Length: 305
Image (cartoon, rainbow, N blue to C red; front, side):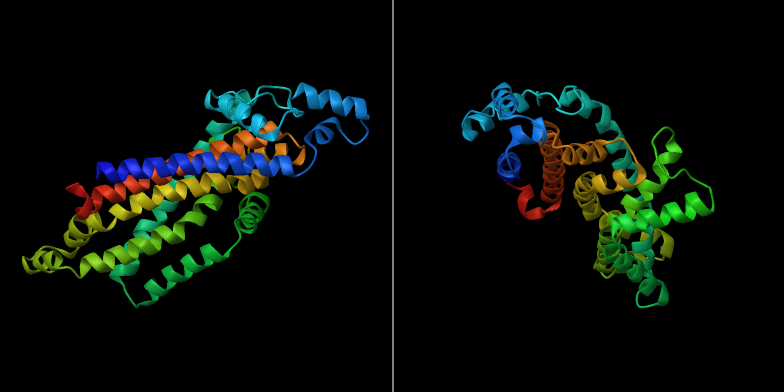
């Protein structure tokens, strides 16, 4: 198993470096950064001064390695628009995004696991079909549309919850629901599939033959084994949600990392864009690595290695 984990670690590092190269190159291939920073009404001399000041006159390979060496030290430069260090901006916004992701994952888990268990117990009934329909709708529905629907219903019409901002914990409820609904279908289906497989196993039949109650069989014996792969999936889904928070944070005006990325993209603030892309990618890669380790620990073929 140690060999497997080491190989996955090398793959994770390689993917992170590849993401940094692609994001860096795409931003620099999108146009003249010096002209974008200076603005449309700038003169040629002003553009040239900015190009020299930010090192944009150097070869692109040299620019990349200079940026990467600073990024490894958590120095992402200074924001063109916000006039602050990129790391300070990220340190201020990242806790909001992590809070939103954690709440969304909690909501998705709280709904998906019981619904998956119920769908497995009531297989081929209307409850099972309803659970599958909810999962299909969750995957087919655009997250921004669902977020706007929540705002119209619970903020505009019912006045139960605020429509935007992040000043209190209540401001996180609607965006967490909108973001969590995106992860819920996959977790629900995996729970249902795992429960169906476990409920048909020999040790479950043995437990029932001993006279154990159905509640004890389902929650004490079956669910404990069926829910383990869901933990690994939850780690991956958290990475997806952190990356997808850009849309949700923009809809609900949450001043998190996603909103920071949107503001930076709309204002050609390239140092912030590069840093946010790299950090979100590293979070996703790290969470995927954790999921791979969990799966490796559960795989009997890897335990003896």
